[in-house]
Image (tube, rainbow, N blue to C red; front, side, top):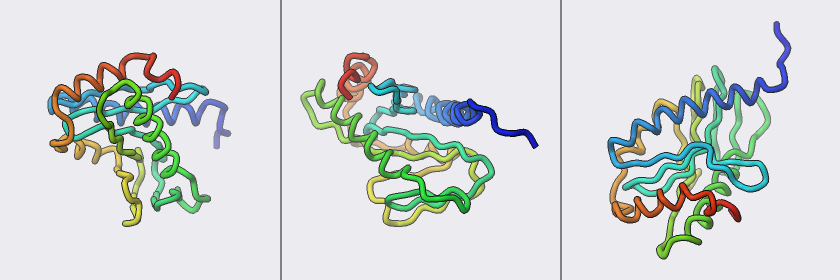
Length: 171
């Protein structure tokens, strides 16, 4: 058996982000716009930012091929491993996005956190996850049918704002 090499985790994560990115790109035909790998200060990024008629979504991708995952309000468990703080981190990213975008908009910008698991064999989501949306990669298209939250003008303004690097300097 091969020993893990430094960078394996990064490559695995990138593969998961690419898979989710491909699914999100398909939502363009429904009026959605996607930004991938939005850079933030302190060497972090937002995996994907989805903006469209159904709102703004900060998408956090986790790639755990062949594993089972259980997601609760404060932690996710992968296989029999220790709890991981994926839910609160996803919520924190969504708050950062909201604050950054609202600095440049004259209207409130609710941002919903989304946690997407790639390649898992089973995903169980506890009913108490609140505002967190949790999907497997093949379920992400469910966001495409959401409507009624943002006007086309707000979508255009938010997308233009999100594409401007200056919006993220203090995020």
